[in-house]
Length: 126
Image (cartoon, rainbow, N blue to C red; front, top):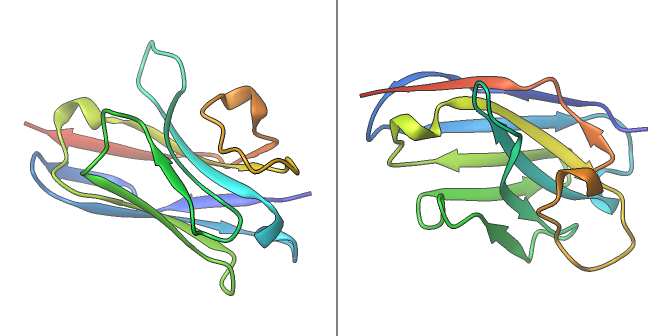
């Protein structure tokens, strides 16, 4: 069992930056690939970024590539999402998620993730 708690959301102007954090409970954090998803009102939850268990591999949605950076600190049981050059269309609730697969692949499919946080709101004003 893994419990995830996101923080760091807020209101920011277009072009600004935010850094989200996701703290995980338990001693097995390093055995999970981690992902970030977002969900805007009336839309489905969409993949943003993923990072491998070791942190050496990452993958991003095309919409955030070059603007967002996912990272993790296994000693602190925490995964981060640094968001730069924010756009109004980035406005959404952001969720972190843990994928307990034994496979090496990083998934963009929300159904592959086993545990979810409660989400943190990010609002980007124009």
